Length: 80
Ligand code: HEM
Image (cartoon, rainbow, N blue to C red; front, side, top):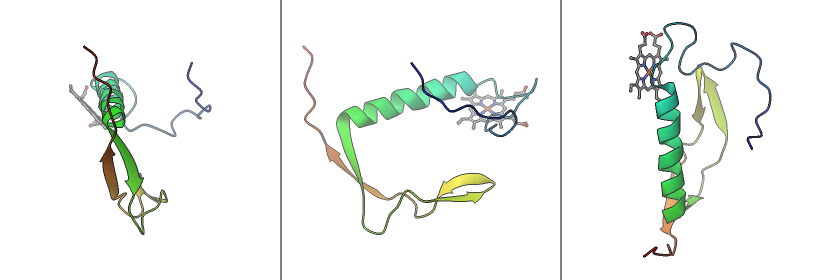
């Protein structure tokens, strides 16, 4: 089940809207989830000193401090 807050129309359109919107939207959102899931299975991420989750809104949302982080490997159980 997805818990997504309701969003007013025309306030979020990274893939544009209407008849010329991005045909790769569903593919790229699925791909991003697969890549994120694989990375989170393998690594634990920790922000380095001086980093934060603060955002800057300059047309698009960007991480204020760059989100430099340290990736540490998990123990990944091998499926035989
Ligand atoms: C994060 C990934 C992506 C973002 C943010 C994105 C964003 C966009 C946006 C904003 C447009 C509209 C451009 C305009 O109004 O002129 C667009 C169009 C388009 N995108 Fe993407 N896109 C992404 C990935 C993809 C992928 C993976 C494909 C192909 C497999 C793709 C194929 C297209 C095509 C063919 C159009 C033109 C559609 C048309 O003019 O009818 N995009 N994309």
